[in-house]
Length: 233
Image 1 (cartoon, one colour):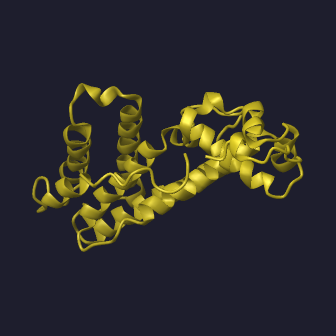
Image 2 (cartoon, one colour):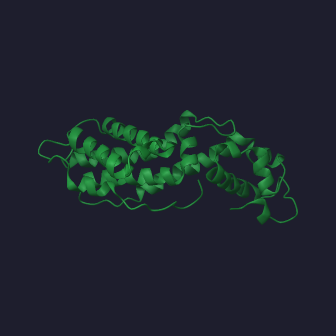
């Protein structure tokens, strides 16, 4: 983590060209390690070894700085879901995408909360334009649903509507798990997430002739935890 102790003894000038990148890195680190309440302009610039003027010089204020952190968070979420390999089983691919989404959110809980407006940070508020950027991961889910419908393993319907149902359930599950409410069971993934995805995909959405709960759905939900992934958050 690029804390002030790692920086040169000479205070950084607000207009130094590398300072913008350093401020973003330090801000992301403080958010990841201590949460939104710890990330203030004064704390950030102290850790970066500069003055608060640097935040205004490079970003115009804390909200714009947080906006860049959020944009990077959406980019990394999109990349995490996009990295799920495409197989011959579209239902397994859908549940693997859900697993990748969950793993990313749990690896970056504070950033995830800011990205989806569950908490505030530095006066930042999610704009409509940024919501559209965040829809990239949803677009991947829509494409996965459409592929399953084309393969006749999901009933014909509006892919966006079906994907929205899946995303709503997945986001709600993830927020509850992050908050610790799933501690009522010993194995949240196996006892809650796995049946949730299986019931939605196989019970509510599966096409006639697709057996109850496909084994591919059960197996693909329990993806290995890939760890924190690249970058802070």
